[in-house]
Amino acid sequence: MASKQSDLVQRNRAQSKRAQEVIARCQQLALFSEDELTTRRTFLSPPMQQCHRQLTRWMEPLGVQVRLDAVGNVRGFYPGTYSPRLIVGSHLDTIPDAGAYDGVLGVLLALTLLEALEGRKLPFGIEIVGFSEEEGVRFQTPFIGSRALVGRLDNELLNREDKNGITLCQAIQQFGLDPNQIPCAALSNDTLGYIEFHIEQGPILEELGYALGIVEAIVGQSRLEFTFTGRANHGGTTPMHLRHDAMAAAAQWITEVERAAIAVPGAVGTVGTLEAKPGVSNVIAGEVHLTLDVRHRSDEIRSQIVAQLIRKAEEISEHRRLRVRHSVLLSQQAVPMNGFLIDEIQLAIEKTGCVPHRMLSGAGHDAMILAEKVPAAMVFLRTPGGVSHHPAESVTEGDVEKAIECGLHLLDQLAASPVFLKRMVRA
Ligand code: HGY
Ligand code: MN
Ligand code: MN
Image (cartoon, rainbow, N blue to C red; front, top):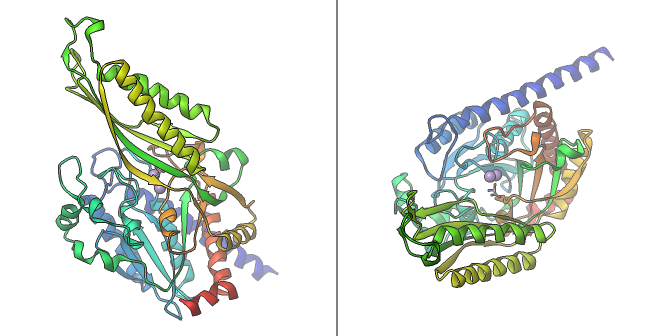
């Protein structure tokens, strides 16, 4: 009895140490930033190279074969007894002024699971993927990294320019990668599935008092850019009735975005960026450029809201004798997660003693792209205060411990699952 007791204490101590290390590593990678005092790591920026190097240093001692694919995804393969593989990963890029856990936590949890295997081989290999671009900051287009894995990186996207006029293709070349090799980034055809651990980034698990959640579906999202064009003029001498004020038009429209989203249960609408030209206090804005982000679990409702807001922008512009144009940057359908993997995650969470709460993801994730090709599922970790996309974003050591435990149960379950292993034969 005593030795069993001490084993349990030993094991708990090891889990707690691993959880502390995951959190410390997230904070260490957060220092690799384009900004002095805050975290910003966008597509193929120099700090991303530091991130790649550090991950390689952590992975190689485990016998992981590490490579960088042509769009800058870190690909770390841990061989199994047979060649088919399970991918476990998330993204390495961040928004500006980011927290330390969005994306990175999922990559480091994958690494920790391999460490916890302590050299044990599973029937299938494990490929850790650290995606190079999920947020869509540099090119206003999310999921560049994961799109390369499913073969959806088209020329239109490769020619998209960042704010310095550098195309995605040039950015890849400047990082020392070869765009011609992008096809080689595709998923290997013996990929059995994709699992992503990620912070919830919302308040639900905390309100329920749960450590972990199971994502049933990821809501769809539309991202557009709008430009209101009026006429710049002197702010002091131009009477109000003679103005064609692009800023006033944009402001009126932004309140319409909020009104439209509030009116539809489960909808969210965000204008996250606004740029006025010439952008000085004593000149009426001649042009205002802004972005729109609309999400809902129903693609039909999301499209209706977007269409309504395009019409509203046109009405406001007509009334104020301005012009407005828009372009669609992304229209991503809602994506259900894989039922078999959801059930396996539920079982794994129950084994940790946590309540397995099934829920929607309001945030987009690489899992919604991978799901186009392979069974995909996500495990959420509670987000204290529901705060994310903010430096105050956090996780608790206890929840990270539970996530590691859940991940190890899940790997053991899949390794013993006739259903899952049957896929290996087909793969
Ligand atoms: O914006 C999102 O949904 C995610 O955080 N990239
Ligand atoms: Mn994320
Ligand atoms: Mn994010």
